Image (cartoon, helix red, strand yellow):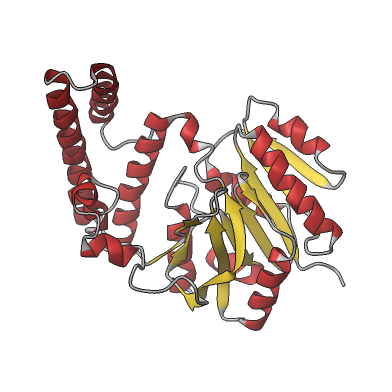
Length: 310
């Protein structure tokens, strides 16, 4: 039987992790779980593209300019023709049988556009990978100084679905984009990733758009994939922060309008001010001054940049 799945991996400067990911996909390909493997290399400078070509005989490698994760994924999907497309981060490892299980689940649930597995870090701990859609005020209470001070605040816990077990199959608003099995029919109806989201939030907007077209999103924890989490973004933390917050502002505007977009922008800038003030106070008190100075420079640069992409 011809496999129903093509795999698309979008990679940037994580050669060794990419090779590990592709090794697991080559095994899945040999087992008949996937037909085509497409790698979009977003302008890597570490030899990733050549390493990907050596990873297996049936891997299509496309070297592209880095226009963001969503643009890379769209380019990869355009080079596939299977009924389903598995969109992957390069820092994932796919255990044998995982793709077949997710494929069978989508076969049995024709109302779903996308399904995601449970993600585990290499140490075996669970990475939370299912969410509700953010409310207009979610960025003020989640991934913010407020969440640091008040970790169990109801806005953040609701967003993270802390009130619902992650041990059962369930519908969710969106899944983390490290591993998404997507139905081509849904992609053709709703469109691909919005390429204006360069990093972060592109999968949130995509799942939101799928649901606006009447599709559903599933989470299947009986299938697990290893995710090293943030390997590409960790190479440039200031840019990561800039992209993360710019995407949150953009998403708020997309879902709730310009007024809430402005509120979230101001809240993020205030968050920077509070963090800079805290680091400055600790520096004045002589607490680990080199570390405090590095963080002061980091937040001062973030304030100068504003909530713009890096």
